[in-house]
Image (cartoon, rainbow, N blue to C red):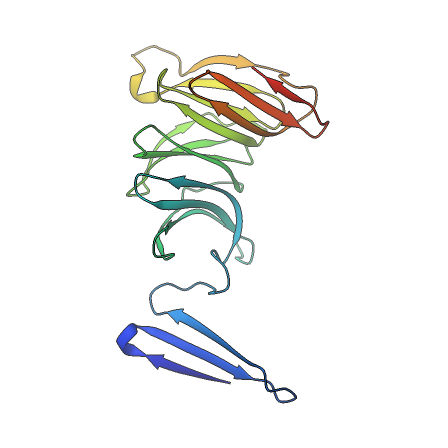
Length: 210
């Protein structure tokens, strides 16, 4: 086993040879980006969102190997395959849902505790927080026409929030609340902007369209 530094390309080459076989194994590591070269992330991936404007992939993940279990959003360059930046937002649970606004300047993130936070997609600064619920956020969608955020929770609850940038003084952020939208917990959902319809399914095998 050995490690060779390739300073010109700022990389480390690690290799090992097994005594009983002729097999060899090579790994190449970046100087500034510590991650396993065999995976797109060195932690559990819980959700992701692709930016077709910036050609970046925003990955929600958590590092269970850490003593304090880190939760974060890691941003990858879709063309080079390299990690570019890391967002941390003091989440109390794993990140379970992500979505962008229309111009993809903001990214909304929901977690397993029902918290929803809004980040600047470039700087990673948390610019807004919504009220937390006791149920996991399973789906988020930003309606660029109505300027609203659709949030679906595992406990079959649906909430529609007004974009905080459009709220007038004294106006409520929560516009609509639907309880028991499904007989079982909601596990998957999708939204069609042009038809203004959303569909969701649960572990009972049924799909509902609203």
